[in-house]
Amino acid sequence: MNLKFKNKKITGILTILPKKVRTFEDDMANYNFPEKKSLRLKKVMGYNTHRIAEPGQCSSDFCIHGLQYLFDHQLLDKDSIDALILVTQSPDYYMPATSNLIQGHFNMKHDMICLDINQGCAGFEIGLIQAFMLLDQEAINKVVLLNADVLSPKVSIHDRNSYPLAGDAAAITIVEKSNDAKDIFAAVKMDGTGAKALIIPAGGFRTPCTPETAIEHEDEAGNLRSLNHLTMQGDDVFNFVQREVPPMIHDLLERADMTSDDIDWYMFHQPNKFMLNKLADAIGVPYEKMPSNIVENFGNASGVTVPTCISYNLGEKLEQETYKMCLAGFGIGLTWSAILMEIGHLNFNKIIEY
Amino acid sequence: MEELKKKLEDILEVESVNAEDVLEDFDYWDSLAILSIISMASESYKKTFKAADIRECKTIGDLCKLILD
Image (cartoon, each protein chain N blue to C red):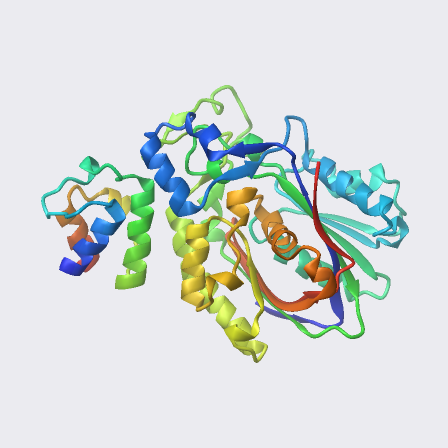
């Protein structure tokens, strides 16, 4: 589905990371594989360190810490927020919505909308698209997009398929109306027939957690996980991304009357270096324009990886400069989405720890 | 066939492979090798495989037949 937006801009990005650093070597002893094989995986996939939340730290805690930071530093006025969107797959509770909890924590004005969205790998793009749609309303001038995921407690430490890239994080993106912004081109596609390629089988209403669902089983590759843990069909996800994402990017560029060279930065979701380099090859983009260093430093915090990639690789430079960016997310859902827009001269673009 | 064997040697990090070599016997035969083969087959041979397709192969010969047929 092709979408287009006018007169909207991003005015700030703050990424919030857990303080705790785990290394691939820390984790390796938990895997059921010879060290030699695991070290090869580390090298090819680009795994190294990742950030893991302390037990008890939830998605809302990271969002609240970041919002408090912005209020304290006069970077955001609490009363100016007309909408609070939270994209997460790790809400504090089934009910109520975590965005309502955050609104309540700060005693924000009643005249606003809070919205939780269940999306993962494409969560930044889906959240931005929702923010742009809300900003079409006269009454809405400023949207705060929260991306937060603390999924590490749902990943088996014995799963070499998923644990090396597990990462927790949150990001706050401010989206506002603008009179001088260039048109924004977006695309989104979904394929629910692949919905179970990435899944936590137990813990919802369909299959509640029981002592049986907590028992770990070994898969054909030698990983151990239970039904309470996240599981990923790596081959299906890889094939889907390589098949669907390059044509989506090419179509989007064509619609915007641009070539791949016109884009300064390709800020993509960060599953691993291997997959990102294959994507860059398929799209025809030099690796320097598509940073792939988020998993190796922080892990893959689903929808938070794209803002983390922007904060980490551009930092304060994005407060002085403006770049043409192609954002893309792809994975759970299956959902894939991309956005072409200018981002720059931000009020803030940085990483803090919690 | 020779070109494919060379690619498999690179993936498995060995000097040479022969049709009768058993995949399970290679030091680096694991899920990463399987993903690398899926990726290589897609790039160089425009074929899409699932991990289960690759796991059904017992030998280098089976693998070559799967990819080239």
